[in-house]
Each structure stands twice: as structure tokens, then as C-alpha cells.
Length: 316
Ligand code: SF4
Image (cartoon, rainbow, N blue to C red; front, side):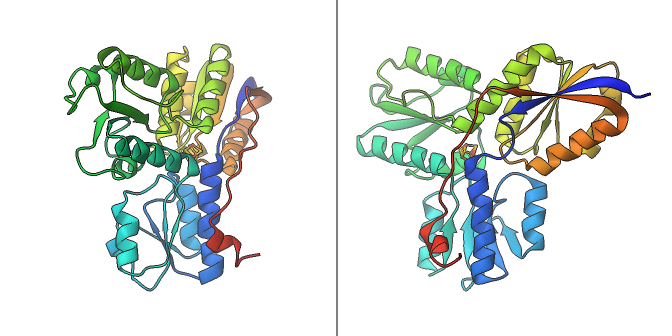
């Protein structure tokens, strides 16, 4: 007789509106122009999604220079530096920008502050494509990157009285609040968004993990190692008191021995992880345990983003 185990299923979890839109853009581009369609950078940070699109004719490249000029290219949901569409235009390439509208909003914010003569401080992770894309909206030196509250003490802005801050959309809500507090304490006149720029999907997924953490012995976050919002969910789980919180890409990565003795396990998925992977993990638990499912719903989402007009007009 299998041992009983309760699976707490976070809601919301998995795909956000920006990821959904980006995948749709590649699918519609393939439908409209046929294969191959080039995609600059992983369209979203999930190998399962990327492999699925590759099978249908998408070709993933790191740089625009890796794309032939006569095939369409899609820019990823994370956003791109301004130089990328500029280069595509110079090469007369057909491109579709799948940057999430919530990332574009941060780009616009940065440009507006720059026009007002403010230097930017960006709270984000060095080297993450979204950070690279957002910093690349402004000329070199106009955006200072900080990751932690400790970093704030070490920065040397041009004029400490003329500063604004922006953030990556997929950060930890609580850690970012600490960095913002450090910025406001050192630069009292710094201008920023009402809240941070952390998006609704990141915020909601973190809230659901916080709500379930006291009632679970272990947390599994389905997501990719290079997915910022998925990594943050693991950290949020640990900080909320979950002794064992692990990132897994698929059911095959579950460390069953580490779950020995656990009576309740929480499951969530990062914004770029498809629900089919959640189903796979639940099925793996069902093979080993007498599972009771318990949804933990902290919010409902109905956000949807339109795909760019060039695709809407020609594909029914
Ligand atoms: S995580 Fe947020 S910002 Fe990123 S693609 Fe999804 S909705 Fe957009």
C-alpha cells in the first residue's frame, strides 16, 4: 500500500501572459512564413518549450549576425538592446519583437527618465538577457546596475541628486524592497515607480509559495536553471521556512530520497514552465504515493497580451 502524501499545488503557477504571447509569436511566424524562422536567444527560458519550437522549424541563435538576412527573426520575451532592432533594420531584415509588454514598459520608463536628465540605477542580475536589454535602451554609462542592498554603498553616480531607479521584472519582491530602501536612504531624491517594476506574474507566484510554505515539508519548483523568476521561487520558499526547496526541470530530476519522510510537498512552476511538466511531476508522485491534491490559490489571473499586428493581420 503506497504511503499517503498531500501535494499542495500553487495557483497561479507556470505560464504568464508574456511567455504565452512570445510562444504564440514564434508559432504564428512559422505558420505565416514557413520554416526556418530564426529566434534570437531562447524565446523563453525553458528547454522543453525551445525544443518543441525547434522541432517545428525555429532556429535559435545568440546573435543577429547568425541569422541570414532573408529569413524572419523573432526577438525573445526578455527584450533586446536598442542596437539589435537597429542592426536588423540596417540589414533590411524582417523581425518581430516578442519582448513582453511589461518589459517594454520598463524600457519606456528608462527612456523617459533619461530625457528628463536623470541617470538610472537598475536593480537586476548582471548578464541576464532582460538586464542586458533594458540597460541597452540607453547610452553606455547611463545605467548603473546593482544587485543587492550592499551594492548601493559602492556606486558613484554622476549627480546623486539626479537619479531614478528601475528594476528587472522577475526579482524577489522582498529582496528588492531592501535594495529600494537602501537607494532611498542614500539618495533621498531618487525617482522610481510607485511600486517596483516586478510584474504581476512574478509577484503572484511568489505570494502563492509564501502562502503554502508553512504547510509543506518540501517545495519543488519546476523551471530552468537560467530562469530568474523560477530561481526566485526557490529562494522565497526557503526564506518562508521551507527546509527543502529545489528547482527541477522535469520529473526525472526529482530526488526521491530527499523527500523520504515528507508528508506534504508543494509544487509550483516558473513563468516559463508549461503545465504539461507539472502534470508529469504529479503523475510521478502518483506512481509512488497515495496522493491527495490540495490547491493553494492566492490570486486569479486574466492578463492577456495581443501579438504584434503583422501576425494578427495575416494568420486567421
Ligand atoms: S514574467 Fe512578467 S515580465 Fe516576464 S514575460 Fe512574464 S509577464 Fe512578462
